[in-house]
Length: 232
Ligand SMILES: Cc1cc2nc3c(=O)[nH]c(=O)nc-3n(C[C@H](O)[C@H](O)[C@H](O)COP(=O)(O)O)c2cc1C
Image 1 (cartoon, rainbow, N blue to C red):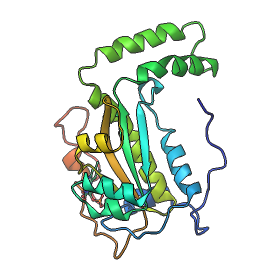
Image 2 (cartoon, helix red, strand yellow; image 1 turned 135 degrees about the vertical axis):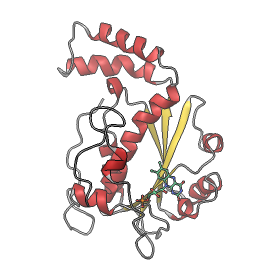
Image 3 (cartoon, rainbow, N blue to C red; image 1 turned 90 degrees about the vertical axis):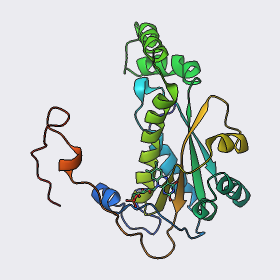
């Protein structure tokens, strides 16, 4: 496995500083329409590399990402994504895939290398791996497990793209079986979501609002009112 990426761009393509996290979260909108402007290679790579740093259970990283940039392929993807125009418009669309079985083949590398790097013990990594296998083999529904992890890496990519000043559109509107077939995703692969990245066309999408904390956060037990401040 690689070391942490070095020398990632630390400014937007126009030289402006990276957006602070609060702006990234508050200003991000699901973009409806994209301009054809490219995402420069250096920035696309940085977005992917940052996503690859996401955490996952046992560090097994059961995610894969298909970067679709060629127009013909974006159109092919659009056709299996309920014909959503933004899939064909955006210069980059990432297909996020979770692998329900392949993690097992990579597990020795993950556990041994983690131990060699000092993140685990060289004497006990095999025992630790066996414990992980036992836990994961008891998992009722592997698609849920890979979704959980893949969406973290995906979200890091989405927020990294926004920090670099790009616009994004997360998408679940696609025919998963057709995406698999069209883009050679293996049978065990779970197509989790699509992420379009580029530059928004036209006016910024209107903020649709969010529930206040009193509607979604509880205190200590599910259903117990959260006493915190609910004001904006
Ligand atoms: C996982 C996920 C899948 C989504 N799928 C679609 C989609 O297929 N098509 C679409 O137009 N919007 C899609 N959206 C966008 C949501 O509708 C949008 O994020 C939501 O309405 C809130 O708006 P905002 O992101 O601009 O704040 C998706 C969002 C997420 C997080």
